[in-house]
Image (cartoon, rainbow, N blue to C red; front, side, top):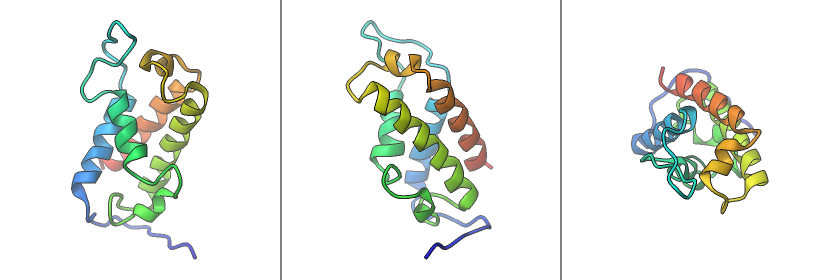
Length: 126
């Protein structure tokens, strides 16, 4: 059974929500500086963002709508986050977890990650 929530609601885990917002900010931004090994020199950086958005949530396995009330406020936020996670998984499938940040940033799907992250950030920041 699917439960649809249409109005905003408070979240039980505001600290996890802040991690998600931080991840979206990183993913939506241009990488400022890459280190000599092709890594994201920012903190937080790409690894942190992927960790907070995908590894610390079940969203790569379970629909984000299940996090309404804990991390997300409504189905609009769940829809926006679902798109970002799908874009990240797509890049990860091509690049793998061990490739450099530069390879991720250069991936053909990186523009979609940035676009969906910016859209989700706008949605969650309202």
